[in-house]
Length: 442
Image (cartoon, rainbow, N blue to C red; front, side, top):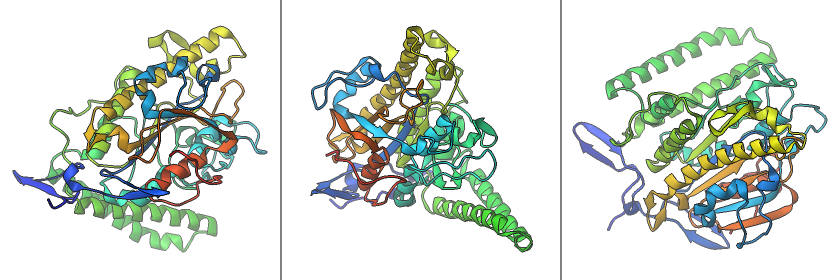
């Protein structure tokens, strides 16, 4: 039988509907680490962030290899133990002060996916580095409606001082298109749904696109005289601004060329942000699965809560703020509450993995064709240390990752090395920040 193109469309009732990946579409890529690996579905990747570190004593398995017992915090992942790896020994060196003093929370999130030292500023001269998700989006983003999807469950400011002289953008944003272009996350499930599938009917979407193009054309023309009046620094900022505009235009053109995606009839449009935090996490997880399942995007970042978050967790009996508790000073009662918060977040991850594993794809599942990295740029929140980070990697990356293990790497191995290894599995060979090479995951 002839293979179908991923851009094959169904025509009926005046609607063109892009198909999700189907078995009849055949191979989409191959990745080699020694021997070639034949894949029958696209590989997706997601990066999930949780703040303020962990109770590492109840997170880290006592034994290495394939025979290990999940510790207390990781117990909700028991049904998926054979689908994931626990990775120990990884570090985020650029989250450390390195001469910049206080501000570990802001640096932790800024450095997590970039491997770069954030510039200490609470002004507009922010700088970090290009994050791994955007390096991936640069490779596979042209194949999908959305190059990447940035979501979260806690809103955050994009300006102002949030952590010892660091801009709020650092502690609320994990995705960076470039060193100076953070990508804000969307926390409203309704707006995420609309971003994936578009809001309104086709005529309304076309009208909005025409309006946006008109505005962009006006901005471009209106700025020509302005640019001649600016100094070098402002010229650079303006160039970056118009680079973003050109990117928006290219996305609009690409989106117009692809058949529109149509949401499954059994997935209701979200009404807004749920009042309960656990429901918010689950709904965002459902949207991520939907985006991967329909091949709307293959790259996603998901911030459960901002770094330094002082959110309370009253629904699980924790009324104090998370950040406040993370500075526990070895108080056993506070550590016990931190442990409950850690388990709450892990239950959110377990829900996501369950949903991914329930989707059949080829001879396996959607989870088999994913790489889901979960963790934090902080280890022990009380000490603000950035070595031995709590990192999980779920999914088999299309058959390129051996799962079901606790792997201990050499102390202070850059977590960026993990990102390099994930990029390799979508045929991207690129350094990430302070990376020194890849990790052995096969």
